[in-house]
Image 1 (cartoon, one colour):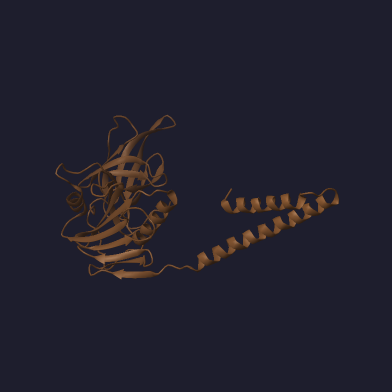
Image 2 (spheres, rainbow, N blue to C red; image 1 turned 45 degrees about the vertical axis):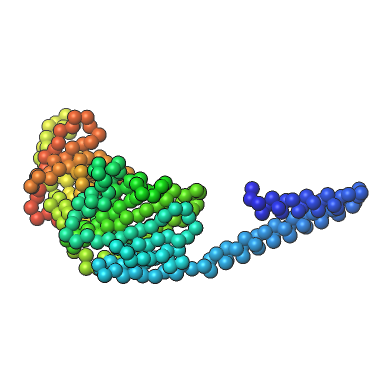
Length: 314
């Protein structure tokens, strides 16, 4: 029960006590009717107050501003809750009500690939600290792939540092996202949503095809002996990896997948769970079932001229 409802009920109780004092019989019925009227009016007043508050909230609009970088990227941010500064890169600092530091810092590193840049910015005297690694699309589209890491901040207490590294035209665009732990979930969600909106708004001008794992896309086939209804038959299996990191693995079943550039990870596109590992050596692809103990890799050979550019619908 919220405070507003408690206040309303308190007012009704007070009115009932005042109206009933020293009265009996038909007077009690009159007092009850008055109390019912008072309750109705209080409820109506409460509803009007909530409606007015919602109307005021809806009239508050974001002050969206587009930032254009000399490095050929742009991002849109809400000026009312972000402050932008240019100092050894570009920073978008969240200025809304929140604890600690909440910021996106952007730099471009020409001539360096994502893994090299990530190591340089994350490593200390003992090498890389404990961290998690993922990958995914950058911005709001599906045409640019990014390498991602996350670790506890070593410089800001109760904060997390996430990194998004994007291969861009012979170099790497790096986003460092610092988020501090918030005292309540609502504030945490507000900060997360605001930072995500900026990241999703990124646009890359004149973005060239990425070369980080350009040797992987293609269709790879294998002739495998299988048992169907007790009969040994030769079946054709294939793995198709597309340039946009979607794909299909066709064996006993056909599974839509997402393939990672690092560590040979293959994820089920529908569940996000890792299901295979792969390795590419020349025209050969080796696929291993990660769920099977001591599984042997299946060898696939790259098919010349196979279409790989289009996405797979799933």
